[in-house]
Image (cartoon, rainbow, N blue to C red; front, side):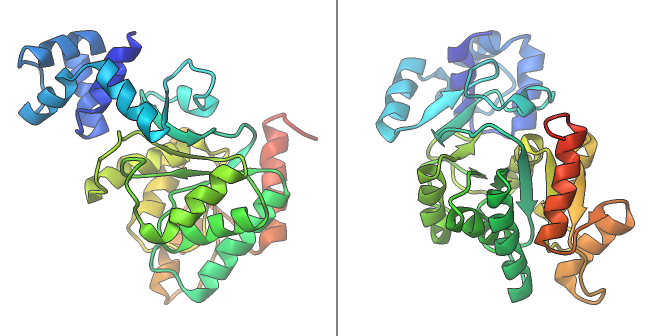
Length: 287
C-alpha cells in the first residue's frame, strides 16, 4: 500500500468512516487518489482538490511544522492500534509515542472541583506506577489528568480532534509542551490546519480507546465523548473502570451507569493502581 497515497488521502478532510468507505469503493488508496485527480471517486469536490496536491508538497509542509507521520507497520506506530479494523492509516505526531502499558483517563469538560482533584491524583499515581496516560487534552477531566502526568514527570499521549498545529483548546497548550518534554507525544489523525469541528471528536475517541490497556472514566454525563470512549473500549475488549459519584449529580450519572452495566468501580489512586496491576498481570507483562 502506497505511503504517499495514504498521506494524500489524509488531507481529504472528510470523516474517517467515509474515507474508509471511499477507499473500499475504489478498491485501493492508490486508485482513489487517481480517481480524485481526475475528478472522480466518492469524495466531495473540495476533498478531491486537496487529495490531488502532491505528496512531496505535503511532506515539505509537515517538515516545516516539525511533524512526523507514522503509518501501520512503521516503528513509531502504536502496536495496539494496528490490530483494530478502524485504525487510522496516518498519525501525525509531535514527540514520540511512548511504549509500555497505557491507561486512558477521560471525563467531562464540565467537571466538579472534586472530579478535577481526582483526575490530577490519578494522573500522578499512574505516572509513578510507570504507566503511560492517554487522554484527549480537553478542558476538565482530561486536562487535569495530564496535569498530574506532567507534575509527576510521567509519560503521556494527548490525542487531538483537530490538526496538530491548531491551538485548541488554548488553555492546554502548556500541557502539550510538558508531555513532549517528558518523553510523550501529541497525536492526531487529522492533518495540519484542520479545525476542531464537533463531528471530528467521536472518531478521535476510538484512538484513545485503541491506545489503552485500560480506560478510566472519572466524571461523565449520560452522553458525551467519555462514554463514547468507554463503549468503544468495551467493544475492543479493553477493561473499563469508573469512579462512582452522587446519584443525583449529572457529572456522575455516566460513571454510575457504566458501573451498573459492568464497569469496575475504582475508589482512590491506590485502588486504581491495584486494579491496573491486575490488568498488567493478566496481559502477562508482570507478576
